Amino acid sequence: MPFEEFILRWTPAPAIILLFLRFLHELVLYFLWVRVFYKRLIRGDRLIKSSIELAFICFVFWAIILLIIHQASIFSGLDNLRTLIRYFAVYYVIVDLKLSKNQINLLLRTILVLGLIQGYLVTIQYFAPPSFNNLFIPQEVNLEAGGIAIQKSSEVSSGSLKTGAVNGTFANTANTSAFLIICFVVLMVSGFQNNNLFLSKNLFNFLIMYFAFFVTYKRIALLFSMVIPVIILFFYRKRLWASKIIWLYLFAFFVLIFASLFFLNVDTSIDGWAIRKGEEFNLFGYFGQLFSAEYWEKGTRQWIIKTILGGTIGTGNWYGFSPESSEAVNALAEILPTQKSIILEKQFWFEDVYWGAMLLYYGIPGVALFGYIFQRLYQTAQWLINYCLESQMRSLGIVSCTLITITLFYGFVERIFEMKCFSFYLWLLAGIVVNVYSRYWRESERS
Image (tube, rainbow, N blue to C red; front, top):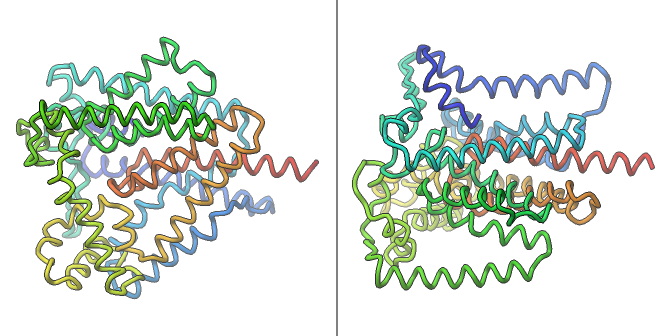
């Protein structure tokens, strides 16, 4: 999956075939999921249960009920739901498997190696000439069928990358940085587990990953990558080291503010889309803009969250407008007529503030059910940290707890749950955690 866009870029096939290939991995996963149920029914085995199935089923039913009530477009509404829950199939297939410790180790090492490949490739791309980087620009796929235009493309599919930024083999820098976060967590936990994080090889990999975050020009990913070591140290109960890192960050934060005031000449009028349009921009100003007063007063995401809360909680529409994204935003615009024009103008950006988008689509019940799923997964991973004597299993729990923590906060600034690679590996790791947890409980029942 991390190389899907690059492979399709160089696959000589018609648009309809390329579009099918984009969905092929999902079809395979659904087939495996159905096969799990079929195999167990044939053998008369009971289905393996975890603590989230009921909440998941209720969430899906709630989304379908909202589609019927609001008479929304069934196809668009279900497609919007699909992008959110499609990799639950990965979770359930993994939970059903009999995984050995060596296989779990192999999976974690594979994730780490894939991440390092992307990190080193991104670093090479940053210093490479444009002719090399053009090899990785995703191919635009357009399909006209039945009068409906279906366009599966990305922000870089027009033929040029972000000015100065690099994507690895992904469709855009958002997907690149999201995948790097998962691999960075595995790298950090592996280093702390073996007490070799600061050995020459691991330290070099650590620095490469940080540099990769920087050259994707995803400011929020870079900030979260700095928080990850602190979170992991807290889960390892090394609070002294965590506090030292926090003090180091605070010192660096004040230095950056000082530099932005006197040396960096921060231009608060920087357009976030300028780099996508090929325009020149001040690199230090782009990152330093986060510390400007104007950014926080007129920041797009802050305004969107405030607008969604005002249009849902403030008006008593607690049950969601519609799982179909455009109809939900249109309904919000009708409820807030004074802001209608700007809401419709910024319609595309509402999904970036994904927890806000979910509140808009599925209301408080939907957000509560989805949040409960991740709360239960977090508790399961926490159990491994607290009660497993094997360092490998404790590390698995720490990886999962860290990712869930980051994901919950990341969801306020990016559509992280919809990003294919990130979502796939998030549910994969959750499935491994529940698999290990279930095995421990079965062994305890036998004894």
